[in-house]
Amino acid sequence: MTPTNIRPVDPSDLPGLLALLKAKAAFDGSPDTLRATVESLRDALFRPTPLAHALVAEVEGRLVGMATYYAIFSSFIVKPGLWLDDLYVEEAARGQGIGQALMEQLCGVAMRGGCCRVDWHVSAVNPRGIAFYRRIGASVSEKARLVRLDEAAIRQLAQCGA
Image (cartoon, rainbow, N blue to C red; front, side, top):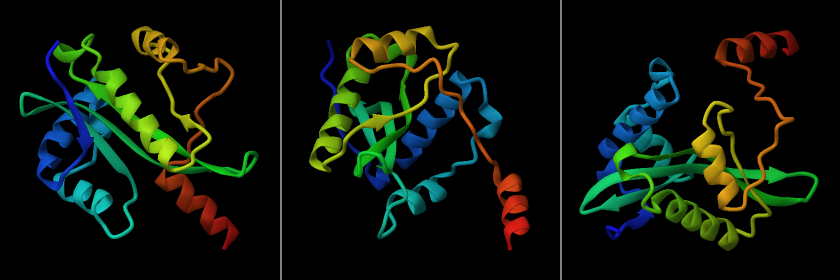
């Protein structure tokens, strides 16, 4: 097994992070939805109050995986949590423990932040991902459905309430 370095993303990593996001979008079957650029990632991740954070997996000086996440809050438990927005490991690097190492680091971040949980979505048509998440101890809800308002819907609904 090749040694893997899991660490917070650095500004110099942003082109590599963007490449991983492009690969994740293609894996998800939605390459046209990716709007991120190096500049927009820099603004989101390295502003005084970051909108999100990222961990990267590096093997032999090359980024092969990433986890992007941000803070959430549970009003029922009255504690913070983390939302795992994207977890991705390049296909050639899968099966080497890199996804688990990223999740272990993310859980370390959650513990240090006093988080009560880490939440995320997994595609119903990603059996390998579902099996991986179950293997690391996650519960996968078959009852929940993704609900989303896109920018146009947000704008329309906000105008109704103005």
